[in-house]
Image (cartoon, rainbow, N blue to C red; front, side, top):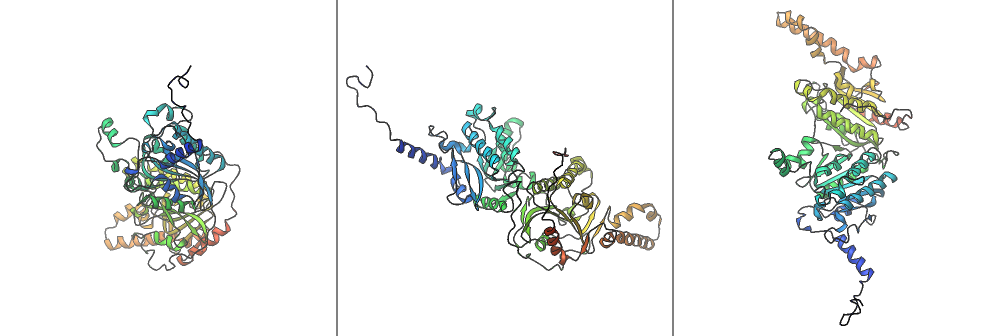
Length: 518
């Protein structure tokens, strides 16, 4: 005899209706957790709604941990959808569920969608808002072959195969901070986003440092000091809009080329007063970019960091190009340690996704002095040169006013096989500027001239001779540049040369890769 047939037992329990049970489980998973702590943040599913085309999202693993009432979808939403009709994979952490922390199923869901992205060559959008690994489930997420390490392994494997774009809305803590680090672009929401290997509380306990969250790993710090963030965004919607826009400049995978868009005229065509005659005078290279690219198409990257160099994507006669430009209004445009890294990473990114590069050179050279030597300017500069030299996409070098010393090399000079080297009228190219060279070569002779007027006349004469030697027309006479043009003709010159290079192909017999400086 059992309890169901014992005298006085009640009626047998009625099994719940499967459809009703499933509906309730779905509703719980879709609802997520407690939204009261979101503040200015959007719920994870609203973020996805802004990112993806309406009705395109196919979710995986909605019922992960469905039998645990406190872990709807196990704190992460994964699946595929479309952005402007293009298939993509998505990972979206849900901060309302255990602060978006990672457990075994959270990690497995992310691994599965990344494996699919690798198999099907899908661009990946990471909507990151996570407190890191769930310490109550360490064996589940940390040490094993299907642990968090595999997420990073897959991100590295996907690098250069498909675009990986990250919108960072909240924390990305501890080991999880490497998820944005492996992405091609990171947009960080001001006041909410953060990246750090250890929180301020842990830092204080472990090493005695007292620091705020913003100082440790906030959005403003990472977009201006460390360079880990690419764009500072006002809110969630702005970050998502920026990521969507960036995808329009990129192919879906390395096997494709960026789609050509409608051609537009540049925002400005007047060049009067744009380029000062004196090489010592500063100006904003953005004014040159405005006169070269199609209006409204420049998407600047890392604008707040290493400002002496400007990088970004834009369109030239509808074709996508990458811009690498010295910025004379910041540190005279001399390449520093951080700007070397900034340019090197961008050049490799463009080469990976078949984006031709336009270098706008107005450079006195690499920065000199004991400070940068101790920081390793030589190896950092070599990193930029190595990335540029290895890029197989069409490259074009434009000398705006001056290009001196090894800085000219880093900006894709003729020795690195650009498709063309173009100089504006009046530009100078050489190992050293005329005045500096005179003072270096004739230092003893100059010091021996007692009469100030005679000394000034000697210097002026030698400078004039050297300036003539460095002049762009003189170099064109020697076939050391391909064209010398008036600024008003520059855009047209680039349009024709870019069109002529559209049939470019990668070589098939290259080595796997070099061992680059780091």
